[in-house]
Amino acid sequence: MNHHAKRYMRDLECLGFVRDYDAQTKGIAYRHPNDPEQILKVFDAMTDNSITSGIRKANKIADTGWSGPAKPASIKERANVTRRKDTQAQKREAEAVQQRADAKEREIEQQDRLTSRDREMRNIGSLMQPGHGR
Image (tube, rainbow, N blue to C red; front, top):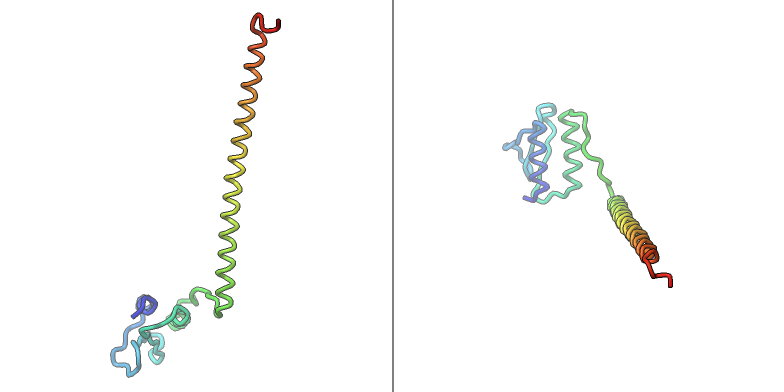
């Protein structure tokens, strides 16, 4: 049994579903006291999408008022969501790199200003030494 199916079983048990050992169906059957006629089945190789729709159905039966996480239904929608997340992550990384570069550039400019100021002060000091102007 894959991890999706195990997660689904845990979620069903948390919602108050009881395993029905007498059910004559393939897979593992669960029933809820709110609707004993309705059977939710758990199979060995369930996908994440089938688990999500099952959890929504379970929440509806258990009358929790929550329909589960909103997941994109089609492959195209999931790809668009993934692409948007990747694009946002790339933008954040580019902004962080730019901020680090700007900070480093400001630090270098500050160091250059201090160095040139120090050089000017040493030059003025050497010009004020006796015998330097002859």
